[in-house]
Image (cartoon, rainbow, N blue to C red):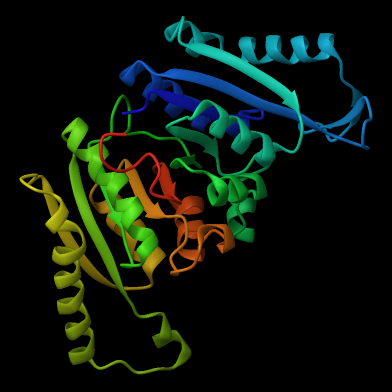
Length: 309
């Protein structure tokens, strides 16, 4: 399923939860895993100086400094690296983080990128209060050709494999790629797949009154779309259930995930029918990433998610 995993890290405690999931997946699937760290960005064109991404300070980078950073990463993840001995490499370089992560992922044709929702060492609550996810994560999710697994909080249920996969959809074109990834993963590991949709009642908060009969019609239409869009692609796979709720989408999927002990939520990187290159991380996905108690897989394109890739 995942022959090559790229774990993008700042080497700080903010990435510890993502490291836990990345190395666990590598152990289970016997994957090649790359610990990838962009430790700075050039301060001036053709300059030997860079701004360290961890400290914000300008420093001189040379071969000795690169080797020192690699040793620091080896020490930081020593236990995990030992558990995947022979299947792990460490790559460090200077550059703009999201650009280098995407470039390396394409060069190595990785199957999955694992990263944290934000990289700054601050209280997670502060980040959630601002409701803004890390800019590097947003840009990686936007540009990646493979799924991006975002780990914002400790994953207490997804040791070794995912047993309850929740696919959240709004039936947009982008959601089909997310479905293919969720279905392929669930089928391979034999996990339960929940097909979940929320009838969006956000407009109620703007004062619009929606008759119950209209809501019931929307629920009926959503069930038909589940059949036409997704179940029709699943063949004889029967370890799934369909759930249609009503409310504010991100709130309902979070409630549903907790109720079902979901250990992976899969959603489209964006929810409107626009080109991936033009899309920002959808607000629903952003809120789910920041608040979910399990990892969230953001899927941008159909690469690496369909067929036998």
